[in-house]
Amino acid sequence: MEPHLLSVSSSKTDIIETQYPTISNVNAVQRRNARHAASCRSATSRHRRPIGNTDNNPTFMRYLHVVNGDCAAQVLARALSVAGRDDEVVCLRDDLAIGPIDQIDDAPHARASFWQNVLASDDAALASAFDTEVASIQALARSEFEVVVWHGRSAGDQLALRRVAFHLRSMPDRFNEVGLTLQELDPSSVGPGGQTAVALYSTDILRARLPTIAPVSMLRMSRLALEWQELKRVSSEVRHLSTHTIVGGSFCDIDAQIIERLDPVWQALPPFVRSIMDAHTGFYATDTLIDWRIRELVSMGTVAIRGDGQTREICRMHISVDSE
Figure (spheres, rainbow, N blue to C red):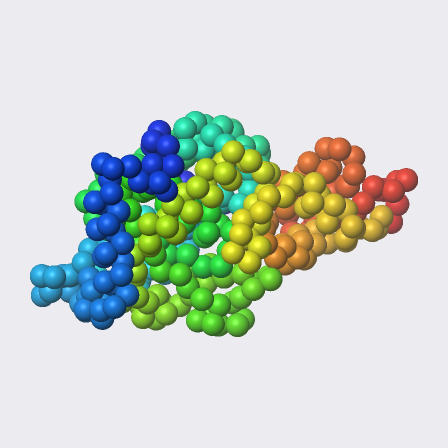
């Protein structure tokens, strides 16, 4: 499947129970905070276990590693293999930066319908893919293993982090993260606006970061989970990362950018699509997304397309698109 689509689910418990603990879970909160403080003080915490083969290291900590996208999953799997670890990598494929998400955790078929429109496909397997994604996050919550979310500075990675935080909110002791920095990434790989994503880092960098897996504090986890709830409630068409905040936008913003960059003369479509992708600094705009918005503009009579494949051309409608 071309775009980022696939894995997560939801609990009906109100998130306020995590943010404002009741008497019944005060002890759990105290244990969580004590563990987090200890991990910050001691280099011998469970998150500083030596890297090596689990058979030779009985104290080795096992994790479920969660990443956003197939490419990220592949590079992390290689890093784990080189480190002699056989931890499972859980790949979340849904590009959460675009499309409605209000029902994403309860009725994933609505999300599948959106992607079918974007892909101009009625493939029934698409709906099944979203069911699989929901099931995989439900499995995270049921598992006995610690969960670690790897993330970079991109809307997709940050949204995945918030979504997992929401689903693990009733078991904060198992929630960990590795936040990759801009400084660790080859400058040539940095995305528009300084964006980074796990998929862009080398195997060596990810392997070196394995000992830095760290627990997420209860306060931070509660904030991330609450942000996910609010993002679902608003359900913007597009979600951008601005500094450390996710902000909403609309497809109209993308459409306006497409129209502004077009003249009433024909130009090659592939480089034009790339220029639009590079212009978006708040999220990784894929060619799939831009192609879809162009199709929508064609259907509205705003732009025109001619040719096939890599020879396709585009222009803004102006009197006659047949003129050379």
